[in-house]
Length: 418
Image 1 (cartoon, helix red, strand yellow):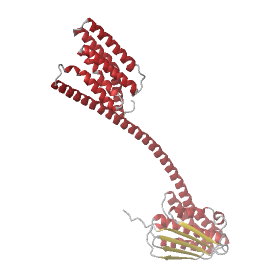
Image 2: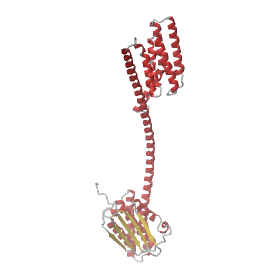
Image 3: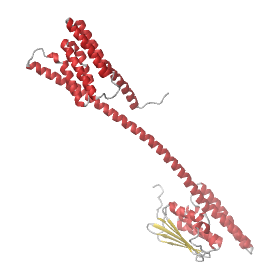
Image 4: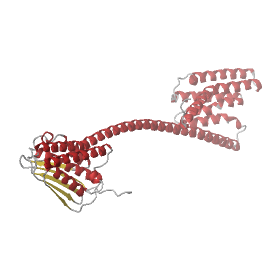
C-alpha cells in the first residue's frame, strides 16, 4: 500500500485535474459553439442563398481565426497579452457580424465570456466581458426607445458585473491556493531541514554525553581507585620501613581499610553515586572525616578550620570540594613529604572558598603541573571546579610548600520534593 497523501495533496491533485479539464474546454468551446450555431442557423433560419453563403464563409473564417490565433499558440501561461487582445477583438468581430445575419450565433459569442478571463491586465477582463455582453444582447433592442436602451444598459451592466466578479473571484482563489501550496512546500522543506538539524543535535548530544561520561569516570577513578591504590602502596612501603610489630600492624590495618574504602568507592563510581562521607554529613563533617583518616594513615597532623555559616550545598559543589581536598592530600603525601597540612573552608554569601596548605617540598610553578605533581590529578581538579563555574589556583615554590585554592558558587541544596 502506497504512502497516505495529505489532505492538501489530495486537493492539489483534484485541482490539477479540474484545471486540465477547464483548459481543454477553453480550447474546444469556440469550435463547438460555432458548429452548433452554424448548424442551427442552416437548419432552422430563413436565410437567402447569398446569406447562407456569407454565413458559411464567415463561420469557416472564424474557425481559422480561432485555430491560428488561439489553438496553435505555444503552451505559454498566460498567453502573450498583445496576441490575446488581437484574438479577442477578432473573435468578438466575427460574433457580431454573424449575429447580424442570424441571432442564433449568440451561442458562438458566449465563448467570449470564457476567453475574456485570459485577457491581461485585469481591467481587460472586465472590458472583454462587457464587449461580449454588448454583442450577445444587441438584438434585444427591436425599436429605438428610452425604455429599450435602459433595459439594454441594465442587462449589459448586470451581466458584465456578475460574470466579471465570478472570474476575478476565481482568480483570487487561485492565487490564494498557489500561496497556500507555496507555504505548504516551504513548511515541508523547513520541517525536513529541522528534522535533519534535530538528528544532528541528537548525535552531537549523544557524543557529548559519551565524552562527558568518560571524563566523569576518569575523574572518579583517579579520585577514588588511583588515590586508594597510592595510599595502599604507601602503607605497604611503610611496613617494610617499620622496626616493630605494632607499627607494622598499624600500617597493614590502614592498607586494608584503604582497600575496602577504594572498593566501595569504585562500586559507587560505576553506579554514579556520590562519596559515602557525604551521604549522612555536611561538607565540614565529611572533610573532617577524610582529613582524620588521612592523618592517621600518614602520621601527618591536619588542621581543619571552617568559617562562616555552614549550610547544605548542592551535591555537585560538595563533591567537587571534597575531591579537591582528597587530591591535595594525596599529593601532599606522595610528592611533597609534608609535615603539616592546613585546610580552610569559608562559607560566604555567594561563594565557597577552600584552601589546602602544606609545608612540603613544593615545586616550581613554571614547570608543567602534570609532570611536577602527579599527572592527571591537577588537571582533574581543574576540570571538576570548572564544571561548576568555579576557579582553581595553585601557588607553590620549591622548599616553601604548596597552596591549593578553589572558589566555587554557593549553590544551595534543593530540598527534597521541591
